[in-house]
Amino acid sequence: MKERILVTGGTGYIGSHTVVELQNAGYEVVIIDNLSNSNADVVDNIEKVSGIRPAFEKLDCLDYAGLDAMFEKYKGIKAIIHFAASKAVGESVQKPLMYYRNNLGSLINLLELMPKHGVEGIVFSSSCTVYGQPDPENLPVTEKAPIKKAESPYGNTKQINEEIIQDTVASGAPINAILLRYFNPIGAHPTALLGELPNGVPQNLIPYLTQTAIGIREKLTVFGDDYSTPDGSCIRDFINVVDLAKAHVVAIDRILNKKQKAKVEVFNVGTGRGLSVLELIHAFEASTGVKLNYQIGPRRAGDIEQVWADPTLANTELGWKAETSIEDTLRSAWNWQLKLRERGIQ
Ligand code: WQD
Image 1: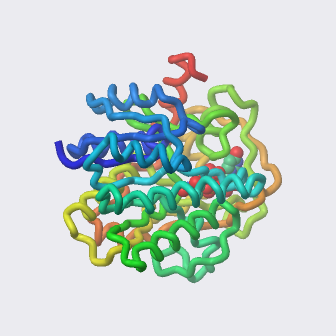
Image 2: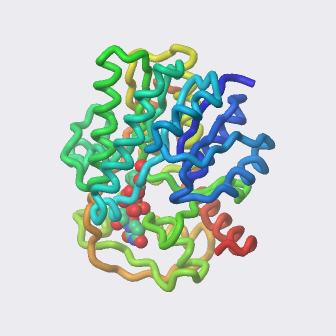
Image 3: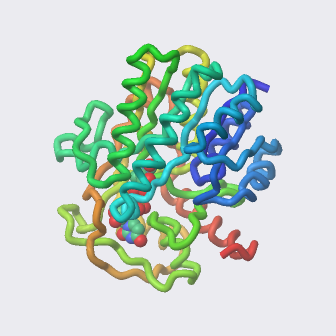
């Protein structure tokens, strides 16, 4: 077994897929999760996929004493991948204080405890929302694009989190960090044993789309078709969740093998291709053969119009590239939805 890695939010959507890829790479994984937006049976499914059961503790990263005790229990954790956070753009507009308390407090606790427990590295789950709405000349967006005023409290927490990490490392803390700015993670594991399963009504596009396709939701509403884009709907960079998970393993390897060129490095993790919401709907129908019932509705507060990545730095510096086609990715999301119904979960 290689080193021991802590994955916070490891029963979540991206976290669970990352745990599997870490295990496939030979790492030993400890998951902590407060299960506010996931279920403990994800641990069973991770074991079914990888053949290895990760350690799991139900724990909230806001619980400082609980975190401290966890590091004592699982000695020798070498690095952390920090996913645990609230992440719905629309919801953050309605509940800003919950987002600031959860997303900032959790990270601060971890950073304070890392030196005490000899944890040398952190890979942070950041987001393209830190760019706000990039100017047209800055699309596709590179890591050098200006960080603009966040369009939502969610995006602002990600910006502040990045600054907290930068300032902590600059203060001389013995911490190395890689900030991965995700674009829009979608899809599910090819085994259909892992996927996106938010509690309650989905906030993100794909789970709402597949729940509509299978009949759980009556109709998908496209939040606006009056944007200044070719078809009027928002444009995003939809990246396969397994490809995204693999980027985290590369980042952990880079930190532990001391390959970093700076104590804090930032990478965009996207495909480099922008797709509109309407194009995605049509791609889903074409790749699955399933007709989707949708309507055009008003814009959603907090949404930006268009953003997609220039992933050149991750491609060249990390040697990582998104491999999976949008068609295969959408099929994986649909297979996951079908499997959920088969298992009587939805
Ligand atoms: C995508 C597009 C909506 C639902 C996500 C994550 C966030 C961060 C950034 C990683 C928007 C439209 C949605 C619906 C719709 N990722 N939409 N009808 O807001 O881009 O943010 O990526 O950190 O965590 O949430 O994702 O899926 O909510 O929306 O028309 O029912 O789909 O308006 O244009 P978003 P999303």
